[in-house]
Length: 211
Image (cartoon, rainbow, N blue to C red; front, side, top):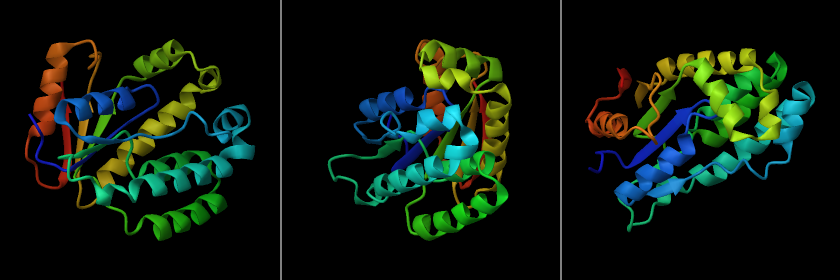
């Protein structure tokens, strides 16, 4: 079942399963993917070691990378009925609001507004909401050494800012899916329920659904 939207973005905290889910959805729908390229970012391990020193460099590097990727969404191939991304435009704002001090955050917002003003917005933005203990468990199981230093306080701040950001978005369909303890990759019934929620035609607005 192909959803009635040409551009879908999947969001969530670290370890929520965004990338794997985006790939699975794209394969099922014959869609194109836009996947965040974080593995080779040299600032990421440095940030987790010394956040205060490397936060601005990290956020700028992601801002530029996401801009170059997302500006191509409007040039989708005619051979693909849709595009599925494992992040949204606003991700940069959410992370910067947590990691940057007020003066750097203000400068970052100005740059964001200049760069992102003309980029296409997702027709549907899906946020995968998980309990914090599940998020931390998935981070541990991923085994990325630099991620093991992430504090519970940092994750809780991100979750809070994400949800606040999503409530304030105008003109976009925002679907917050509370996964509770369900694993979309291992629970076929939960995955089918998720597909049904994504396939519903909705007007722009904020929606919360539970699996």
